Length: 274
Picture 1 (cartoon, one colour):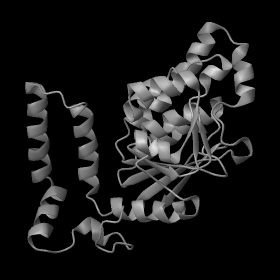
Picture 2 (spheres, one colour; picture 1 turned 60 degrees about the horizontal axis):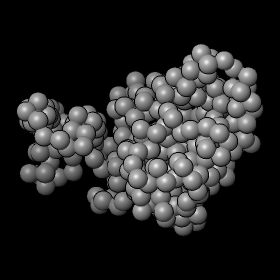
Picture 3 (cartoon, helix red, strand yellow; picture 1 turned 45 degrees about the vertical axis):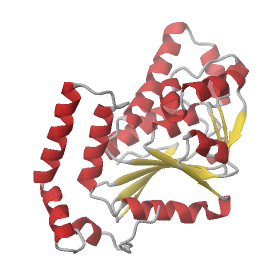
């Protein structure tokens, strides 16, 4: 296992892991090292077939203040080609997170600025505190939210992205929920308890079915109909029905018993809670 300086992987025996941004003294601001370590950490987690859920979280008061000031100062002195390499590294992180086979849940507190919105947007789901603050702040310092823009548009829509990318307005957790960046937001005093409820709920589900659902939804995209997409969907349900986990789930349902993957979860209470 790699030793990291800016991130931390924490594994839970129930079958999920948390990838922590771990520069609280710098408000978890991105720099080249953190981006590289996040890429390496995601590669390690992707290779773990036993993982059922990945949380993206941050130590300290803030999720992430965006780009590190010292890193930005260095970038200002780099030529075009070196800046392009930096952008390609950030893009690798975002695309790898978006394509991760494991279900992902981001948890946002405090400030989430700039590239942090990209990280949140790349996750399958996100929750946060009502008083969290979000901002596409790039235009305030003469930059653009380039690499993260496709993911932010997917999360909150083109019109809202235009507004917040052009105005650099801050918005809170409730507004983030209204736009779809967050699935839910909670009072900050309740956030930790709600995180546990989301974990418990996801762990009720078939691990392989969740991964297959991610593959399916990635192919379906916006839902445009085509003969090739129809065939993909038909094959997807046929494959999962005859798989060992699909067979176990069907038998458990018909026999009115708990499926094997729930019996592996010591906190299972048999109810959906998120």
